Amino acid sequence: MIVNMKRSASADEIEHVIDRIKECGFQAHVVRGEERTIIGAVGSSGRRSEIEALRAAPGVADVIQISHPFKLVSRQLRSECTVVDVAGVKVGGGDVVIIAGPCSVESREQLLETARSVKASGATMLRGGAYKPRTSPYDFQGLGVEALRFLKEASDETGLPIVTEVMSEADVEDVAQYADMLQVGARNMQNFSLLRKLATVPKPILLKRGPSATVKEWLLAAEYLLAGGNHDVVLCERGIKTFETATRNTLDLAAVALVKELSHLPVLADPSHGTGLRSLVGPMSKAAIAVGADGLIIEVHPCPERALSDGPQSLDLPGFESLMKELGREPVRDVKAA
Ligand code: PEP
Ligand code: MN
Image 1: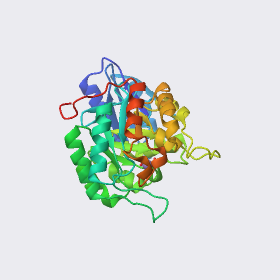
Image 2 (image 1 turned 180 degrees about the vertical axis):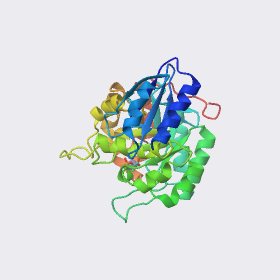
Image 3 (image 1 turned 60 degrees about the vertical axis):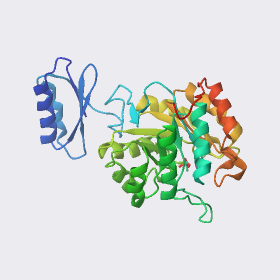
Image 4 (image 1 turned 135 degrees about the vertical axis):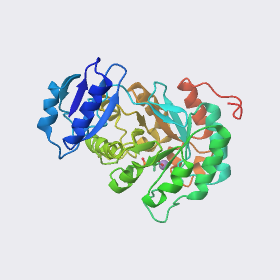
């Protein structure tokens, strides 16, 4: 349930409502908007009728039921868009954020070359997998902590914040030490113990949509992070499984537009995994921006034919540069000075 306070509500009146929500057995989540304060009463075992009775409390404008099963991520609780600050880059703040880099960190040279080039082309963040979720156990699994160190070095040199996937609870501490943003991969979207652990980490989370997850399941996965205390969550549509096999996945851009309606959290699109085909990355990047995506995450490799993972969907360095020009990005001339 949501308690909407009047614009004129005093600090004492707000405090009183928070205390009553807690006394009734709910968690109180306070959203201080520009115009008014909204307080969410969240939980399953509280005394609902007493929250409804708060309509009569001083300073309260209204008490309403949140109609969706997800509460804290809902736009009903917070109408303003959330802006997530990733080491100074604002995600959801109006500018389209472009995250680029290789699927896997393969070597120091490969990563630094890519980082310098995508920075010069106008990317705002760097991606690169250190721990790789591979379908086959015989495929390249990632360089682990060594890759995290290369990512940090690339970030220090270029100034680009880094996002990288954390696959297991056991690696959370290591990844959080190096990364500016922790990615929950599609296969782990409903790994609830991982989500609970990440809810306690003081770093933003990029939560990818599971290949077979509904929008409701995706938003409920995000709810785990917010309910556990981490409000810095960015969602990412990366394509879902459908009957279509011509593309690797089906990039569900309707879901991007829908989630922007349902939730206040920023939403990115991943046209690389969403299509699996290099030639479609540009068109789907433009389409994602057109439907309101707050940013893109794009795989880029200096030599895609030699990539240890996801070469067919990776842009090469000139290909990324041309796409950035088509998207109206200004090239950055002096990488070190930028
Ligand atoms: C990735 O970003 O490299 C990745 C493995 O993505 P996903 O979890 O969406 O498959
Ligand atoms: Mn990949």
